[in-house]
Length: 116
Image (cartoon, rainbow, N blue to C red; front, side, top):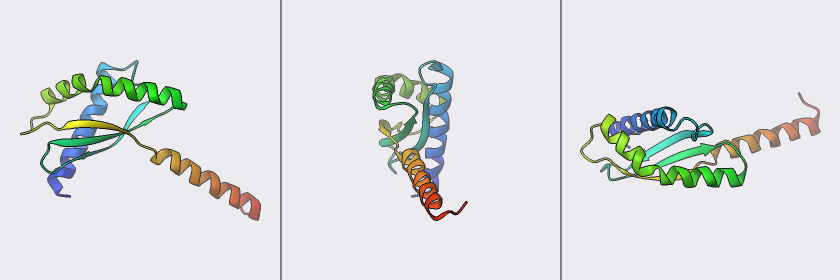
């Protein structure tokens, strides 16, 4: 991945997080943008989101986020000047859940062996 693509990813992540915080403050309280991956030609991108809550709440918020996608993209186009503004796909990020599960398993092993 080129240096430019990495910079664009970070910039888009920061701006979308800011848009959610400013425009959709009440609805986006438990939504975190964890990563953005934009294709090298800037035509497509994936936005990985982490949502805190049970499965029903997560699905509701993900559906809401996908519904707000055109408004977020419009606001993003006023903040960032690129030759092409990518069309985004919002994807649920399970990395935090996997990390939590690994920590729980490590704690269980430590308790069984008697180590602190």
